[in-house]
Amino acid sequence: MLQKSSKITILMLAILIVYSIIANYSLVGYGFLYYFIVNPLFWIIFIISANFLCARCNRNTKLSTGVMEYTLVASLVYIGIYIFSEFFVDIGDNPYSFTIKGILINCIVYILPIIAKEYVRFKLINNVFEKDKNFTAVLVTIIFIALDIGIIDTSDAYNVTKLIFSNMLPIISQNILCTYIAYNKLWKPAVCYRVITFSYWLFAPILPKVTWIMTSVIDTLIPMVVFVYIRYLKKKKEIHKNQREVEITNPKSIIPSVVVIVIILWFGMGIFPIKPVAIATGSMETTLGVGDVAILKKCNGNDIEIGDIVQYQKDNFTVIHRVISKYYDDGELFFITKGDNNKAPDVDPVSENQIISKELFGIKYIGYPAVFLNKINWKANPDTSSIEKGI
Image 1: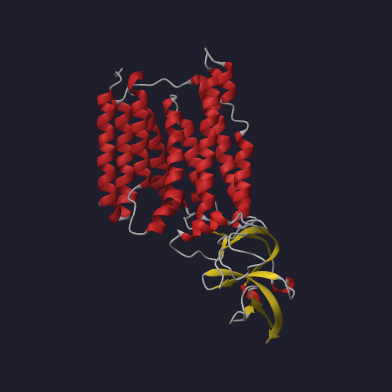
Image 2: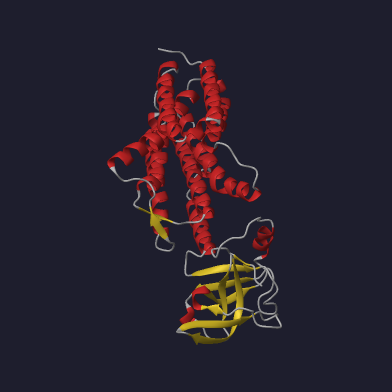
């Protein structure tokens, strides 16, 4: 039987780094050749090499069942959250192929590298002696994060910001979880979580059109919750356990917090019929000032009466003004709107198709953080924005 060797681990990590650099800077441009042949073939060779070159590691039987249960439940919760969101957001057809050939190709292109990465992660971390294990785990995590992220385009500040929150944070969170599982001499639970959660986006016939903010929060929080649960399970099963330390690691209080965060997130994004919108201009001063938040309810033109404060779409931003009159033209309903602090009505009438929602009530001052963040946001948002930019 092969002995543990940090030199073999470092060598294989070095190969991964070199491959990542070559792939991201050269091979990706070959498209079909890279994704369908080179990358799957590389991971097949690498998983075979890891199996032969790395020492055998016995599975942690004390944790295996519990960790597998946690990751399976977390995977189903992940899918359940997105399926539930389909009741509140637009949905679209899955762009991936559902033919037998298409499913087989997608499994080779996407699922095979996931399985290979987690097995290789497990083998490399456990191929060193205990004194080197912490350092190796950190190094493996960093390299695998770099593998998943690839090249970052820094030419556009907005896209960099979006990439950090929508892509990097979930990848970091997921890799920390998978490394922790591998550190505890397991790899199948990591494969279970990654394959099931990714398969939802690969094989579900319809998908919700959720914002990147929502995916960032969900994809980052769930792996962290699983991490905390596994840590708690490990503490409970330790022979020389400290009861106080076990209680400190008890994650029961985390679940309600995560639920509240997700609900607040959905509320802020307008998934529910009622949503908050921060006011960024002074056109409604005395009623809604800069930094105030308007609580709005989705509606259509027939729900609007003269005197109501409405939110409507204007080009690539939204406006919140008061309706001062309405009329029909060729059977279509139009509204004349005006900011309470403006001397004249808005130049263009608002059609009923532009109406998004109407105000229920306002809350003073709590929207200042959103207004501040909007000022450092480099690109305008569509009508799903939580900022009213006004006119």
